[in-house]
Length: 481
Image 1 (cartoon, rainbow, N blue to C red):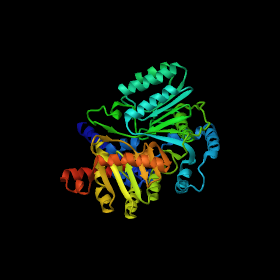
Image 2 (cartoon, rainbow, N blue to C red; image 1 turned 120 degrees about the vertical axis):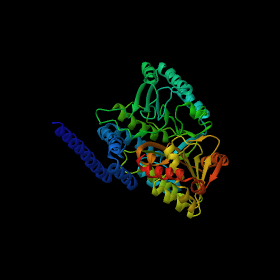
Image 3 (cartoon, rainbow, N blue to C red; image 1 turned 90 degrees about the horizontal axis):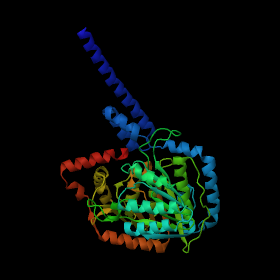
């Protein structure tokens, strides 16, 4: 009897082990067929075959590269949301930039990718720093008459978080409608008591990514990384800032925080609002009554809003970076807190430098996410070989996402130079074609580069073997992040 039980136990364990490895092989085949990039497919396939006990649960949570839940919601709401989108695009037609404008010709592909026009009649005010940006945003909240749209990746219940909340509560008590989206992963440390206080005054609050019975399970891999404040359909704010004290330089760990936000007025506001509407429909299944009448600003900036994400048919964010880099003829300056580009972006950067373009990339000296920080070192040799110049910002943490192309085009938004922004996050970028605005961005970034140190391939090659091994492992895992 004892011998029989021992054999049975052994056979059961052996069968379970075999089953797990077969499942790992099956999941690996699924990854090969479904993961968007070759690097990601290989990384997942190797992990699922070699370490199925750990990799299979991770693949269930992180392995998807297409947000099918959002796609289903978009399709379900097509008649309601698309009717609004079609009307918005029709109204924006009269503000569309002239066909002979060089910037529109260069970025016509981006118009088709985002399905929104390059509009004229806009204004864009740079807000370099948290103090200035939040002062402007709270002032805009105070100006609200009808409604406020709020969307952030991270919201904290700290000093600025409470100031922001109190500003919204004042307007809610005055009868202003408020629609508030925050990301369930980015704001996971935020107590639901914060939401409850807002809801008690009639604010509609949703955490983007929470379980939704209509569209399936909680898909943790897809984060809404957009940061939007929009008031009355007339002014909007987008950029790198979340709602937290560290974004105002109040963190002992990170010290001074370098970020850039943008205040937008003009017809481009309607494009930002349309993106929020799609996200709101996913979360609430409703279409709020909003102001869709474009208002021309005092300036006449040409602007294109790119709202990208994992529900797109194409890898719109990655394509945007490749196309923008390829347009550069004299200068290409990029700032990003994370530098884990895919091969297409790496090759575009190298080719730009080989064409004689002044390619500079500004990264932070201090890390906030160790894996992506280590990954960035693995690109130093490739960048140095083509004379792509890499700098690290030293006064504090650098979080801004800004691009300057030649003397005419600049971009400010939420997208980083990494796989997550390229394929997994919902992002938003404002592309501005105007020499005056580009000059302001040039001045701002020139000051940032003055506060940075140049890094070379030796910053990687001269390090000890354990560090270099950690860097290579981080690079291999980058497509899975």
